[in-house]
Length: 168
Image (cartoon, rainbow, N blue to C red):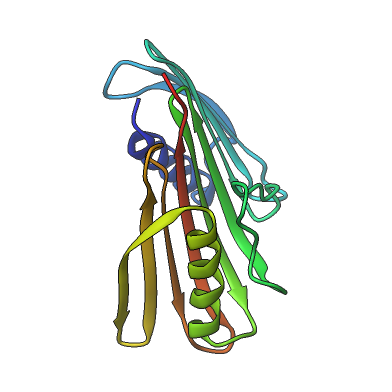
């Protein structure tokens, strides 16, 4: 199974909700996997499950989805979570958090760079493009990856993506 397929399916479900369509349903993916989704009209939270040959994958996305980051990582102090998307698959988990912080983008990036290094990540990318800062890397041995972007404004907006793999 691919995380990308689940994210795309989740996006489709979010678009359905925005159009006022059904708040739950079932469909078959292009790969022939069975999928179910639900959308909470009150909170906007979307949940999805896809069942295939490799097992079951789930997606949960919304502003109130509990934030559980891998060991060694925490949100930038005082951050407000805009949305949190968690994808769980038989071979690992992906987390994508969009947030706002009342601090300059360089301080936000420094926070996550330090955490990544302490957690054993090899920083392989640092970039500054038109005021958007980015840092990213991998942890040797287990295939985990992370990237963080932050754009300075009032407030600074950011996104952290961390993917972890399970053995097998």
